[in-house]
Amino acid sequence: MFAFLLIIVLILVTSFYELRWRKARRLIRDLEQSVEADQQLLLDSEAKLAAKIGLDKLLISVRDMMEERSRVRAKNASQMEQIQTTFRNMREGALLIDWENRIVVSNPSADRLLHEGKSLVGKRVEKFIHHPVFLDFVHQVRNSGVYGRRQIRVDLLGRTAWLEISGSAMDPLAGDAKKRLSLFLVNDITRLKRLEGIRKDFAANVSHELRTPITIIKGFAETLHESGDQLSDEQRRSFTEKVFRNTGRLHALVEDLLSLSRLESRSLELKRERCSLQGAIRDFVADFRAGQNEEVDLRLSLPEEPIEVDLDRLFFARILTNLVENAIKHGKTLTFVEILVRYDQENGLVDMVVADDGAGIPEPARDRIFQRFYRVDVGHSRMTGGTGLGLSIVRHAMFAHGGNVRVEARIPKGTQFICVFPVASNVEER
View 1 (cartoon, rainbow, N blue to C red):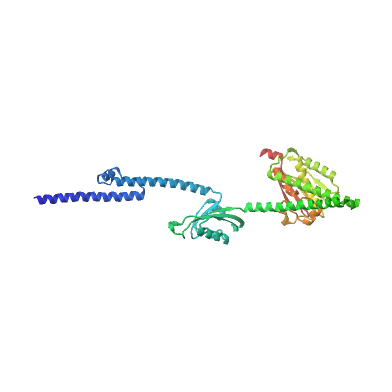
View 2: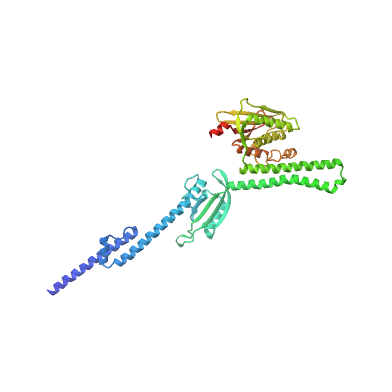
């Protein structure tokens, strides 16, 4: 009988521990699944059971670990969102490139610059920036792990562009030195390069334009100073006239440079007043004819009905002076210069046209005629004088008046400059 009871007790004890073991295994399995899925660790009933079977300390440790991991993940997610927002809003194009030259991440700026706004992710970078200097740069950054920068000139979406590319390598993935991501920032500096070229050309042209009259003045002044007593009256008068003429040329150049600089920087406030365009043109013609030594056939073709515009009278006279003198100096075979006015009532604009019947301007030169110091015929321009800034001043003075200017061939021959002004009533409506 005792043996039977002992067997029963052993069976009950074994069953009890077997049951606890199974529950413990189930709890551990649920615990593993909860950790993997980042779910609630255990239900309250399961937590009580865990305490009964001695797993409460383990449960507390794992729960603390999961809470800490959740906090870290939330912090990382917040930081990643900030990084992605910054990445998206960057003006520079940003590319994350893997060890096979595939683009892992690209921001909208890079997509617009290199792929017309379409995503670059998953594509090889050499498909869009196929330049040996750039590809060698990518290789160097990836292998050396150091920061670098390059400027390259490439054909980009049907145009020639200058790109400034900076790059740095990231830490290798999983300790594999070959599997390294690299971050590159791509900036379109085409406009900066163009402005740099304009600045250099401008500095070179100014230096040349200043050097010529200064050299002449210096040479004749030295001759007059050192050998003036040995010169005849006619020679002294000739030398003095050349000094005077080149001093005037130098003064005109400085004045034109100052005017152009103020117009370009928009620091100059025009003193505009409402007046009749035809009246302003007639006033200019009267003053021009009074001060003109040579007889010039200056014709007018103006509508009778007054057209009111807002003009700075001084700069308006400067516009017409530069255009008419340009026609006279460079027209060569011209027989007349004509100023005519056309009123586009529908669009509220008025055209003031300065035309001549001279040799005309070659078509390739028309796109550059308003550039500073540009001359169609350099030799002829040197002989006739001028600063090379007149037409550039015309363009910027027209911009300051809210208008524009263009040049066209005149039929059957010659050139016409068309200055477009907004009429006063149209300015008020705007």
